[in-house]
Length: 311
Image (cartoon, rainbow, N blue to C red):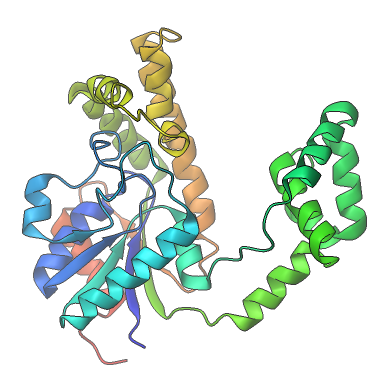
């Protein structure tokens, strides 16, 4: 199987601009690995490729859902796989571009679903957590699955509940099922590049991007989305930037503090992205100078991806 070329990096690192240059040079099509660009109308806050850019280069998995709909990792993996195969069937080259690390990991390594939710058992656990505290459930998890307990925070109730639920349904530790899944799954072949910038440079770019989004009408965009018949669904409401602007629109935060909150949240998000990307040990990291043009980033990325070279 051909290796998939994948370009990622923290938000505002310049990956979309570099990907446009790369796609034009090698006649490729872009598959978005971004969890929020799937939603129609969420354009400004997701830094979605413009209509003109999408005319220049065909993009996949952009504008495929209404913002009231939910989208799962499992569905993304299926959609991305189909898009990539369809592109290849026409003799074109797909390039995956995006910063949703969970989507990257799920696509490359597969999605472990586990048993279906046991809602009655979950309600029972939640009631116990409320009455006795999450620490009691965490202690139980340490007893039945110490390996997984070490990986999560003692207050991460969502993951504690799921791990106990899986153990209740299968009598097998969650961590052991994950190991079995990993052994059975063949990793998808991939050449990945992470665009990396100096922290000060990245923060400056993030701050400027956020300011530009508000100048371009992010608040008005959110108002339009909230006014749609279906409004914004649970996932869309949690999108970075949108949840803060919703607070502003609902009168719970003034505009100045909203902009400050979006900047801070975006910087924190970029830090989490970089932590995730370090888990992809085979990916190549490309250091980007503050003044580097998209063409220069494309040159270095193409060299690392080896596009056009034999395996």
